[in-house]
Image (cartoon, rainbow, N blue to C red):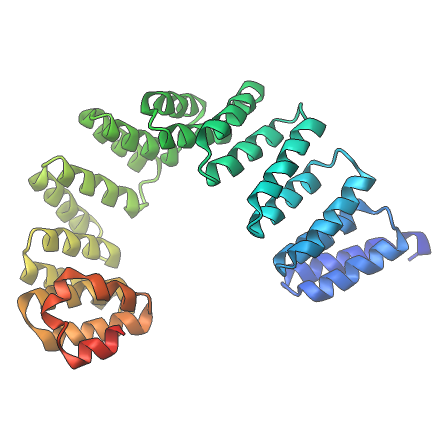
Length: 334
């Protein structure tokens, strides 16, 4: 390899180290490339991102500032500085960089979009909306419209949010947009239309059982209990080898206080997938409600051993009220 091309070899090594998540070695290789070619922006950017992965945010910011000196209009460098400042919990400094970014790159819709997203994360929704409006004017792509819809929802401007989602759906079919539309229609009290949108979401991603669960919970909420239970029973008949379908059925039965039937459905789920914490937890709540403390404690212990966060959940779970004075429960939950 000629000396003039050696920086490319170090760049390739650095990218390989990044792929292996060996960020310190990657940074050393980026530095080699930079030493050979000091104005090599790609190496500087790679080094900055590796420092971000190491959470060395101040060092990353310094590197991205170097990129801006080399390329004052480098969008990615401006964005990465703002993101690093936000990650460092310095939101006002991050906003100052976003403000400077839109000054330097006013014709790039991404600058307005990311500034708006930052303000949304800071719960400054009116200001966020101004930036997102500007981004939509420049490039009304689905991502920008969905972002503005979220901000409008935070402001409880549901009709306008729905209008943005409907615009997204004219550009293509996406279960996320249909699901968002369903939830907006639910907030607006347009329940029949909401159900239709849940159905469209399911059609867009039929294998996504979370969408079925969303529809079932909505049907229960609008007092269509029998139809909801019939739907989840049909799912169990159609997909008898899916543990998560049996878990959904068990949850629906538990909500109806049919604890023996729920236990049977949870048990079937465990036969199909023996290491699912949420199934053990569901069994524990059913047994506790029935007063079977031995089975409740055994299943709760299994749930916590797989997913320790259930230890916190158990502390406020009303189903375990009958167990709270047991020494075994106190030891397990604390």
